[in-house]
Length: 582
Image (cartoon, rainbow, N blue to C red; front, side, top):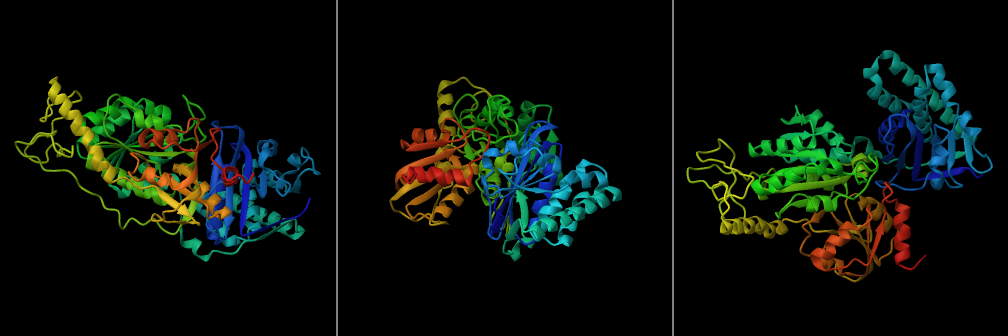
């Protein structure tokens, strides 16, 4: 086996059993890599169990910005005997596997590039196997040329609160890892030469959940009520942790039904409100979505998708709940569905979800998924200067009509105590005053009033973003040979693949708003001879929605629904196949 030479971009994967601290290594490494003046990206795949099974995390360190999952593994740190088997289909002849002696004995040295490091032996000397993860992090940091002082700062930040003894052992574990890493460099089995990107040290390192959360805070969120459910729980934790600093209230409800009704109650009282859940939890909220539509009370719903049906794969990723969000609840009424693809999108739609919910008095969805919620990468900044909280509440008066029939369908909305009129709401069909009615003419007028909002909502819709030649451009009008279409978290895998190919006949169209579709959607789809849409579901839910709303039939659907995201390599192969190159 040849020695491994890596330049500009290295893909490192750590794999071990649940309980071995794989996520701890990820937390250390992403911070250390950024502090070492490299761009960094990480994603994880993990099983829904406390112990057993195999969990892994991928970390990319690069001289250029990296934001995508790749199949390629340059260095695999195997912390369990099953690690190599678990990742067999991603291991190539170039992959270097770093492992302990007990794992080394199980592997065919003629088949793999193997490097022995006594993780466990050294960890036991320090107090137990749990320190093997920090030893691994130290070894990797040494390989990447990260200064020991920067690494120690990360260890201090993570473990100082656990006491002096534990911190001291973790620092010793990191030092032991550096010694082992240096021995690997001295053996010349691995050569890494990644140019420094000096600006990264002062950049933000956040994940998808935090990007959405920042958008919610900037959008004026004041109340969240939710019941914990992977992968929406991290947003609940983020809001709860920041509640005091930003004048918010977080309430952990007894179930999802209570959560969304609490949110609607808070919204009726004037607090911008959000609930966070996943698919099977949201199924319990369906009736209350209709309540929002009928009483025209705004609510933001953060729906973090995972594979279903029922419990499905609780800790994996999917884009299977677009239909669920679109068709939830009985009856007909407007809604908006956003699906951020990058952190800037997440900030923007997280903010505008609250403005749009208030403006149109409707439920607004933010669709993410496990992959998007958990990925980390560094960004220069998160600019909120141009994001304003828009106030649509009015002061009531004695003749105030909560559901006044208006030309655009938007009735003036007040809250109790704000003025001299009454804010009457009723979940049955109602009159302009808000009193229950079964008058069929009023019923017709009220349905038409609510549906008229769609005309104005379309004016505020986000236009799909078109990328070609590696850059965004919304004005280009030409016939491409192939238009690759994606929505939500497929953004960076598709974009990196398109940029990697550098084919001027290929463009990428991304949707960060999937309902209602922008009026120019059909026109933009018709710019190419062929189209292919990538989705992490089995039906092609956005492709079907596009056909239903515009009449345009997407040429091919590339569908993946095994619980893993699209890799850059997979997207490259899909594009090449559509171009007839493979």
